[in-house]
Amino acid sequence: MRKESGTNSRKTIEKNRRIQMKDLCLKLVSLIPPQHFRQVEKEYLTQHDQLEQAASYIQQLSARVEEMSRRKVQAQAAAAAAANDCTKRGPPSTSRLVSPVLKFRVFGPSLEVVLISGLRRNFSLHQLINILEDEGAEVDTVNLSTIGDKVFHTIHAQVDQRQHFCTRSCTRFNCI
Image (cartoon, rainbow, N blue to C red; front, top):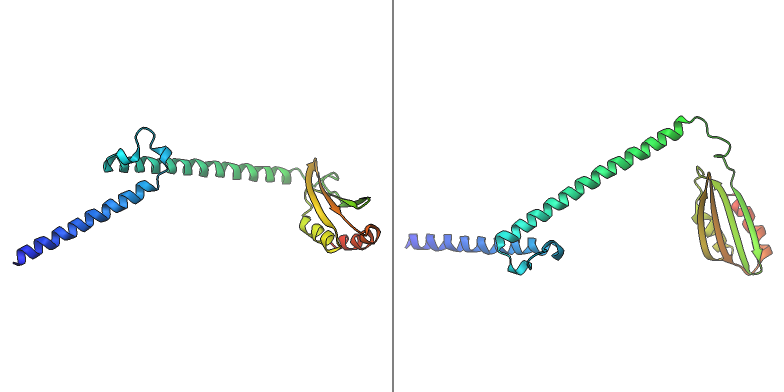
């Protein structure tokens, strides 16, 4: 009696193990995109072939990760070299040190604000937009252009009270 119950228990354990392995294989194959199975539908492949396709796909992904890591290191090295090149050139020239210039142009209910700053000026554009909106302007578009060592921020907005708006806003922009 004991041998039969021991044999049945081993059979049941082995059957459960096979069922679990089959489920895990199906789960693995379901993670592989269909375009990886080029020639034959994955439903018609044997389990062994499906596992080979999964291994092949994992190897391809691994190779892509290695390639992207290599490119990242190259890009970081190039950026570091460019930064070192800029610092080795000596003190910045007068063309790089640009004082911010703020210009307002009013065209009826439309307002154009142009801020010109240098490349090295860390200017918070969102502060400028917040001031405009706090003063009652409705911002339509925001453009950013870099020409040489200068950065041009252009904001187009709609306003109701243009003269009152400009005098209050100009004093607030000086605080940025």
